[in-house]
Image 1 (tube, rainbow, N blue to C red):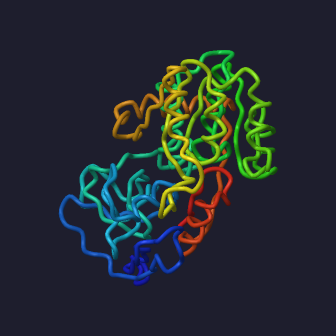
Image 2 (cartoon, rainbow, N blue to C red; image 1 turned 90 degrees about the vertical axis):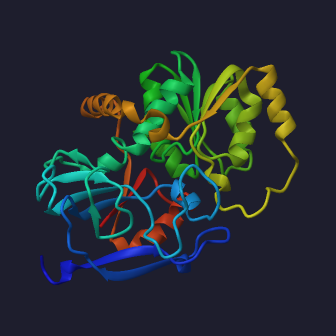
Length: 341
């Protein structure tokens, strides 16, 4: 290893955000790489996944996963090469899927790693369409949403890492798909590149009216990852026995107090009761981890056959991860956001 490579750049949580994250909530630092112990491997990060769930991990509160401690490396899925190995299960040059976080190098004992094809042409896809976001779309839609041919499926964040895959799977299942996205360009991508039947700009002043017009037969499946005004507009359009897979609420991640305005909970609860609606939250690997290989086999086939298009947004440089992540929470990206380290 070169002298430079003995140093590890890493981005740590410098302070907990109050509302939307700011640049000073992150800190780029350089530390020495430790010597490997028996059974360990040294990983050099090639690609880092940036995902909305990371905002929740910056808070110090109860959740489904531990918070990142102040001073610790920001968490995140990674595609890495094995740089050195003292583990018989891994050789130098192996490419692996892991969870090294926002840093150049990481040490692992191998139990948290999945081997990838060392020569795969698009390794970043293991963090997107063939990784956690694609898996979330696949299981959430098919297991909880249970779409049937001819039904109307509405997808929030339609051009995002999860939503773009949800919509395409729903089309494969014979559904009419209406996306919701921020801006005319994203709606164009949803319709023209991803094959959605319609896409509504949630920034439009008459968004709720446009959504209602696009869903004349009501909504049978709503794939929720946003919340906020999008969910408010969807609720009165839900059909009897509609299904709502819930994987995120990005509109509320930066909230520091309850949203202003009328309390819509009674309306929501009455709608769910009268229309017998099923809404189920899920944490993908906790709930469906054993089915990951099943998902990969099916999704690889769909991508290879051109039935699912890959929508990816790549940013170069580990040092640009904080700015890219803050942009992600504002909806600046289109497709799966990945840092090419």
